[in-house]
Length: 171
Image (cartoon, rainbow, N blue to C red; front, side):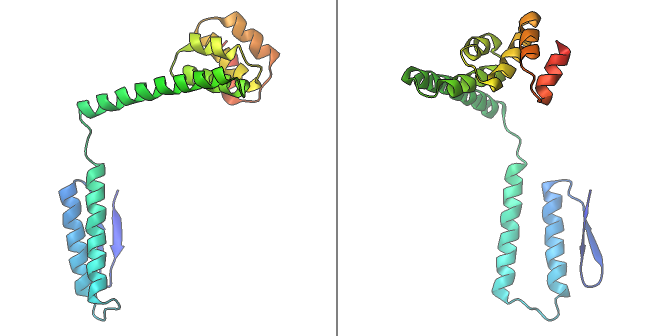
C-alpha cells in the first residue's frame, strides 16, 4: 500500500518495503520538495527543523521495527509472572484488612480466571454475592467440566452479556 505526495508538478509515489527504501524515499521527497519551492514561505531554520523532525520520526520507526530476541521475550514473560504473583499477594493483603471484600473477591477471581487458574477462581468467586462474579464463576465451572453447576448459575442469573450467553449456550 503506498502513499502519493502531490507536489507542484508531479506526484511521487512512496512504497515502504524496507527501512533503507524508506530513508531513500524520504530523502528524494525532501530534495524534490526543496527544489520545487521557488518562493519559500519558511525560513532556512524552519527547513532544518523539518528535516530534524523527519529524521527523528525515521529513527523512532526504525526502533519500532526491530524484532525482539528470545531473551527479551523470556524476560517479559518472567516479569509478567512476577507481576501476577505480586497482584495476588496484594489482593490477599486487602482481603486480610477486611474492607470492600465483595469487590476484592471479584477482582482476584477475575485475575485467576484470566490466567486460566479456574479452580482458584471458583474458590474465590464463591465467596462473593456480586452478580458480575457469578458470570466468572459459571464460566470457571464450565472450563473445569462442572457443567451442572455452571447451568444452575446460568439459569439462576439471567445476564445480558454476550460472553455469558455464549458460555450458557455451550453448556
